[in-house]
Amino acid sequence: MTRTPSAAQPPAVAGHCLAGSGSHAEARQALHVLTGARGWPQHYDPEAESTFVSSPCGLVPVGYLPGHFWPWKLNVADSPMQLPRWRAEFSPQTPPVVVSAILDTVARALETDPDRLTGTTYDAAEATAVLVRAGWRTEHTDTHTIATSPEPQPGLAGLSVQCHPEPWQDDPLDQFEDTVALWCGAPDSPERWSVDFSRETPMHLVAAITRELVPPVAPRPALDRTSRPRMTAARGRPAPAEPASPLLRESGQRFNVVDSRSTQDGDHFQTCAIATDGIPPDPDRPVAAFVNSRTGKAPSRLRAAHFPTREAAAEWIRGAKPLPQPAPTRAEAARLDSRPAGTTEPATEAAPSPPETNPRPHRR
Image (cartoon, rainbow, N blue to C red; front, side, top):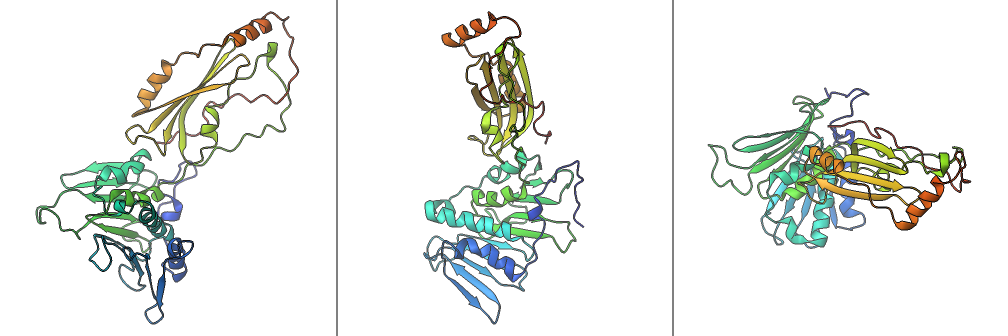
């Protein structure tokens, strides 16, 4: 039985990855990334109810054979009519979103950089990086790297990458040895599905599925200020700068804020935030830090940097100094300070509300 997380705990595994039905409708849905806009030719065998699709160049044949133990077959070859360089097989209950994720990634690589379909990028970290950032547990043995889902669904899904042969296996491993396995579901559940990849599968293609396993980060709801009264702060001073700029508010699934704070010193307002970056420019620096500052009526200014850990990001924020005020801004601030107390300027637009103390719940 699949364990369902409580309302207080976000799921560890994306709901659309829990199980598929293995129906012909789902097969057509998964193949549509190839047969739709791309127009890859297909052949349907009504007697066996099987579907075969191939890239126009003949390098990537795909087959769906219902009734087989591994109904989904994906092969990638260096040239047409040759044995595949690597292959992948999917069990019957594999959700269509998982199948289409790898098919779409393979097709895009074939269109833009065919060498990446057979490149020797076999570093397990390339496939596990997104899982590690999502808090999945990782274990390294003499032969394998294994990542499994954490609470509240511990071990429900996982990725196993064999890096070295077992004592009973040949060294080096055979080209068609299945060394990469993904799975989701309880061991004895009929809903359990798995995907096997042979040894020479590039890890960036495996990562196309691991990204699907991680639940998307819910975007922050947009703040509705249309019904708020127009007002200005006392003595004409603007409200604090908004939290970490539109880069965080409109980034959708990219950033997950884990800590934030706001400070005010006279006319200087500063909001700091630490977030995990789902698409970091450097995989070794997955933590982003933001410092958003505003002084007087000057526009807010954002500084950002990436770090390997939250501690390093927090240390950088502690050392962040207020940005120097331009001369016109200093003159304007002095003029406002010289006005009688209680005097305000008419509002020209609704002032932004103070930032939330914790814009998103803490996730590990």
